[in-house]
Image (cartoon, rainbow, N blue to C red; front, side):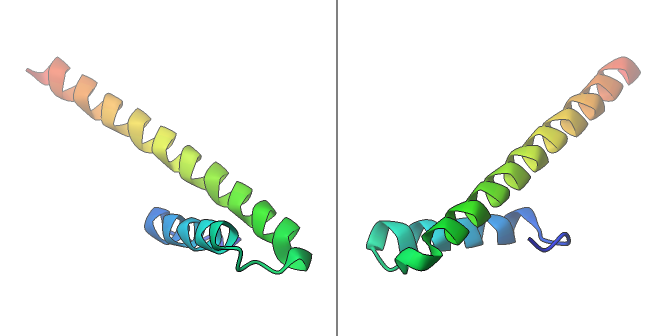
Amino acid sequence: MNENITYSAAMARLEEIMSHIQGGNVDIDKLTQELAEAQQLIDFCRSRIFKVDEDVKKMLDTLSDEL
């Protein structure tokens, strides 16, 4: 997976993979590869969400302390 990928790009790629799988458009020989990529994308997106959540909580705490 590209290490400079954005959350939006990762989600778009994940949606593309899921569309292939759900539509039956995935070559059986590439299914494992597609699923592995999807898992990496899910892990990446989950970590970004947790990171943003932590950052927002810190910012809110700082604002709360300043008020």
